[in-house]
Length: 286
Image 1 (cartoon, one colour):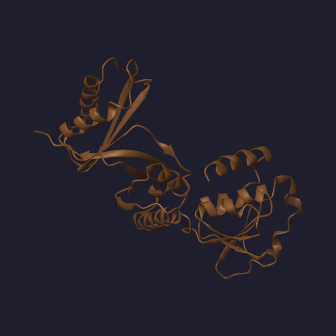
Image 2 (cartoon, rainbow, N blue to C red):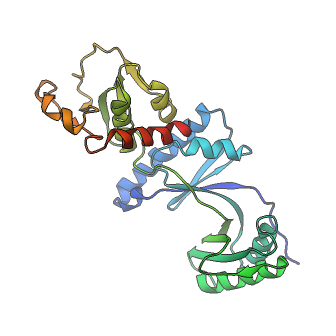
Image 3 (tube, one colour):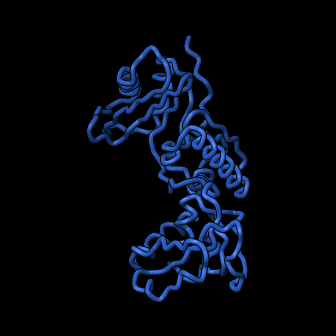
């Protein structure tokens, strides 16, 4: 008799750029990312358990929807999936996939299974996809298989002795973990400079902000954001550079020699409409 484990939703968290680093750097960035995940969840008052294994991080919580919303604001995360976990045996996977599919596909719809695995198993990814697809087909009346353009896609990711079953990817901002690239001083007094600071944070820089414009936006992505008075100079030993929201048209009027550190212009190639559109997306996630 086959006994299924209790279906507890788990957030499967992926990163992208971090995986390109050398092993020691990747390990350090992974720990940084894990710490940032825990800080964000604690700040949003979401009880959870955060673990990691290989190139994946996992969050178990009873408050799945709010946790996903919080995690989308953690730089370094490229995507999130709400997954159900079972063992890596092919019979158990097929049984769980069939059970999982019943509430996620309707009569007349088409589906496909995308399977991948990591580790040593008695089956290939193709064999797993075929068997799981058969189980889903038998568990649902009136459904069709369409491997090219399905209405519903079921993903199965097997990692060593566990299998994760899910049906969607929630895209996040990727980038590098906040704080992994040192500190910058950001002058923020309008929409363009607000986005400039945010873009440097996405690249892993912790921003010290001069000014009070849009600090609610930046603090949503860095709960420990430091804001200083507008007349405080950026001359600090721990500052690696200054961030300005300068447009290409205003570049000739900007004197970078007064700062004594590198000056960054993240939005210099962006139009005002592009700045506005991106900030609208960012604000929609707060």
